[in-house]
Length: 212
Image 1 (spheres, rainbow, N blue to C red):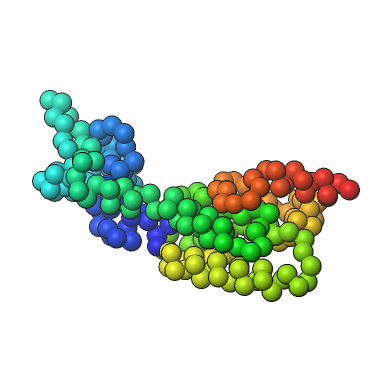
Image 2: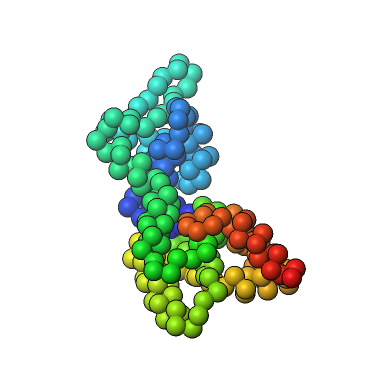
């Protein structure tokens, strides 16, 4: 899946970015505005797409005399599908959150960072996940590793992209904080919380461990 333009998985033409813009808009937009937000094609190409979509009834056109404004016809039978395709990132986050609800050893924190959190990337981008596990006894390690392995496969099944999982214990996190490891910036700017305690709370607690 193209992590920067997920709708292209099902709509690979210029129609995809145009529909994504319209699905996210709360008001009518001009052809030039849609072209700027879509970041693809030419203004003329975007207008041709809009004319074609308007002919199907999926897009409404408001003629204001000196300009045309386009908006998604949310009553159209296809509109809910367009809205779902335009919001695949939220769907992925919800599915991952549901996956964690079945873990026998829940993480202290789990979150998404990198391309998914920034809403950019491409077909070759990894889905970056941060897992902070509890400090645990050795007999629990095998169960934890099984969960992580299943999670990696789930990411591939859902997106076609590889999962890059950075996992560490609370004690290891305290060590990273003590040395001010650069990776900390990647985890926090920006990130999407999936389950467990918020990352800010976990970092605050680990800083206390690092001090002591």
